[in-house]
Length: 325
Image (cartoon, rainbow, N blue to C red; front, side, top):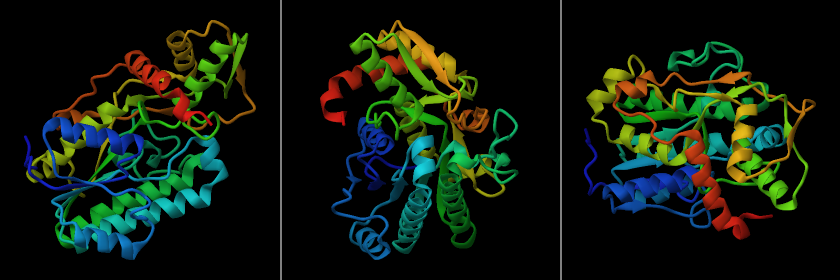
């Protein structure tokens, strides 16, 4: 089912990021050639007038909003104002400018952190706004919720076809491997890699190791995103009523952070012991998405966690010189 022809012009905002670049690769692999992009130097997405002018000057058939300011627990705790302001500004500007330019179809990429901290597991789409959010990333989550509601509201008021996908924790090629300001997988991968290279006896891991997380390879995320973008309107509407709302994207399988760390050690070749720093926050106790809506739309994840970690580590080794610092 594909209602987006291969000659469609598609603007991918955030094409240099991990997710945006994976979506561009996926579109190109499927035969799309009219992919519109702009670097931050060419277009500041927090500048409303600039975004409107860009989309007015570059007519497209669809928009993928993959641009975002992202980071792990440390970054979210340290820069909460930046996370909420930049993300709300970029989302508002791109979605409103797409409407003003007459773009009928748009795909907004959110995050599973939109759900309440203690939402029933696995988390269904209708758990949104049913309880308090996880405090460590609340500003980012509020921004993503605003993006969902913007899409819903343009659909309701203007008859647009603006769709939202909410991925679980992502990893893969193109990720940021800063030891403190990145997400758990790239942070652990770099830490274990450096420990293995130095012959260290131990690696310290934040938290207790008990929280459970679901991880999705970015190439699977890209495949799911393009799949949802291509769906005929009547199919998307039939599975996202009554609000033409969002769709969870994940594997439907989770593991403890301890299991993740042990798998990472095996992939990287670290044979020392793991030490758990319980003074550091654990975050949400469990985050597992209910992906039945996505399955009903015809898509399931293909890349297993250990396979995905090995692919990512191979990419990391090839890029190591460029991503250090």
